[in-house]
Image 1 (cartoon, rainbow, N blue to C red):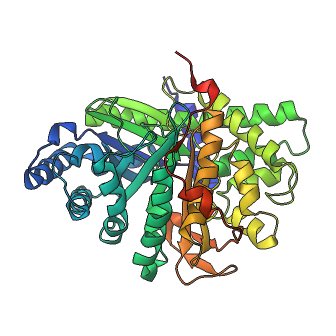
Image 2: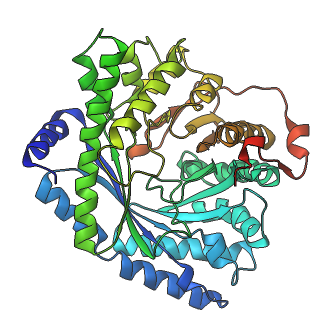
Image 3: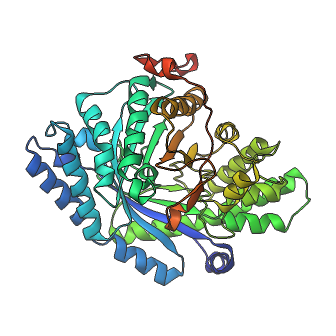
Length: 454
């Protein structure tokens, strides 16, 4: 049971340390919506989502009111649309029609985002997968709340380089189609290796085929709480540092457990997982980068950054898993650039580069996240960056991801503004040497030798 003492302590964290529940995400299976007639398929999808999620937002607000815990977003994830639409969609426009149906349903129930405009192609693309991927620029241009993801690699399957090559082109096109809005379409598109199918965080959320018909997943966040706790032990040894992070992560995760339990009970939908991530926001005092500085860095990017991040990530997980029986999703420390004021300061100071961020992704929760690059970055370079990041995930048997924004019309040193949780991002330089001959090769990179475990 969760005691009132814990609740009282949590309220103090909320009042002064930016503690929040980042999201309640309702996962919905669309497998029973499949129909060979596109019109009926879209009707089935709209009806299933609006009926399943009709009370999600109101219940979230009730929990906020009853417990005084901010729940920043209420979201929906659905079965990867490439699987659902395969029998009815014959053109990219057909898939765009499904994206618009998802958007309309999300608007009707009042959620912030809906994820699952996705394809799983780590071992190769079906015709439906390729159609969906090619439709992504138009789908994200013509919708407001739809988020898209592609799982293009895994430790078991290797990396589908045909998909990686195509995604470089798709990301460029998405940036151009949404150029009038800071190329924001790219902020709603993520490429994964080893994507978890119970992830509550956008843009990568989708409802996995191994999940039940409906499921509640909750994502918690508390960088400000961890930073404040570490300020109280400044200069202490590593044992004290680690114990402090673990104890704080435990408390933060208990908040998520409380919200998840209540949401599950009130909606009468099974509880899935708690994602115990430290996900920053643009708000002052809500930064993972500031935690790294409190650990002992002048700026993220300084020597020792990867070690500090590895320590933070591991202790967050060790503390969080004791607070909930069901921990999943991504879990750990996120290092997006645009959403973290401390990361932006490090970039502006010249301490943090794309290459150092890539090294940090070996030990963090996700990967190269919300990074703006020059608008004239060519598609093969984008594909090469994706391939590098997916290779880290594949070889290390961890989830990695890429969310790059080639900001249309922008050059190094410029800023792009997204607003809200997405924040703003400095345009970072990329390596100018070509990888085009590598990206032009067809086929896939095979799985590593240690993947063969049966």
